[in-house]
Length: 534
Image (cartoon, rainbow, N blue to C red; front, side, top):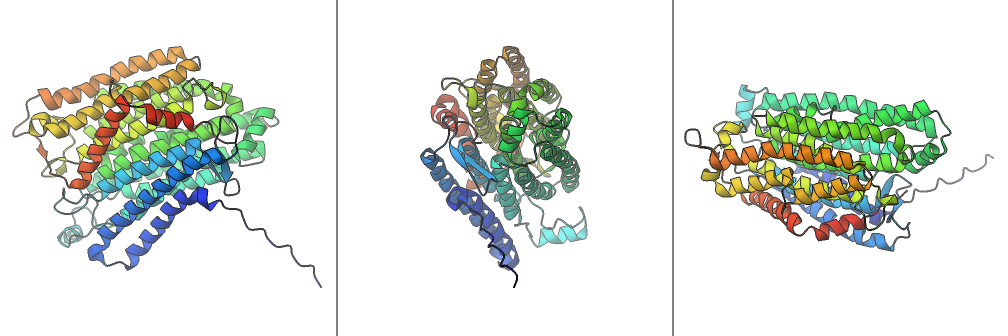
């Protein structure tokens, strides 16, 4: 008789630590079932409630996980543990990222659910397969069809972002990258208005995104060839010991950097950003601007500090150069933009450069407790930037003409007279982007510049301050246009939103100003997050 095979051990899954991920993933799957079996008449409302309830539940559990990290034995600077058989790192920075991603997701879902602005319909087309301007499209409008599957798609993207920010091995990170990217490619092409522009944006994002994913995957293959492992800590051990080919290591770092820098919109991998931001439905643009950048920056920090930290002298000069180019390009090109969404896109590129300034600063694992670190400064900056971005794009959805949203800057002249509250809210976001005191943006820039200065990059801080002054020009230009320029004709038309968009703008304004006046609580949370668990 043949010998019995030994039993296959079951994987050890820390369900309590991974519950936020599981809640969002489970809600996304339930959302797919709702699409299949729920009556069409109430499906949109059901999807809205399901998505928002799941995010609130996941956010509450994230708070519990964050407070529970103190009870887990770890190093002096790192809090947390490696979960799911080494696939996920549930540590302070990662759980903090979960929290801000869930807040961004909840605010974005409220924008997705807005139906008052387009005659009782959402911002998404009724049938994506219909040719723009066709009789089939007119029939879909007449029948008031809506794409309610945007909610499960957004939830899949959200869980991908959360996993991307906390992946502890490169294969898990690549899977998370695809899970967050594929739904966004679809969502970008579902705009109800200007559908050709929306479909063009989706196609460009898909093609360039797939291309960058290939670079990232090839870099993963080379990292495995160099270290013999996909785990970040094992790669770090191989990098520190320098046992493999130096050429293979540098090629791996370069290729993975291309994939990650593409996602954050850093130059010279930024070309997709203005076209996609302009063409995508504005709620989707808000979701991408806040969520994708936060998730990608956390992945960038984790890969370069945990896996390639021992080779920082090789990659840090390149990151510094990219930071300078990205800041200048975003600020300079923004000045010539006449479309609000394209201006905000180039603004996001400039902010990617500012974040990279903090990235090259002092790492939390080697910094003293009294110093601002790269991780804490980037975490705070991402929180502030995400809030301001979502608020700014929420305002964009309300300035309209007969064709829907009007994003040409000339149409925004006199908005301060037509709707002073709305224009004032947008001015707050512009001032925060510019880094003006008493806004969260000022504290965020102070943090990343302090981190860079602590790391010895004082000259990079000087460049950052000069670029900030340059960028302030086009932010102030928009404020002058809204409040001190006479409107053309009758002036801009402002749609009356439902309570959903009002809540989003209100939360964004309060958060932006509040974090500028009382930044201490969030700064303490970011500082308390500590370093990455290895």
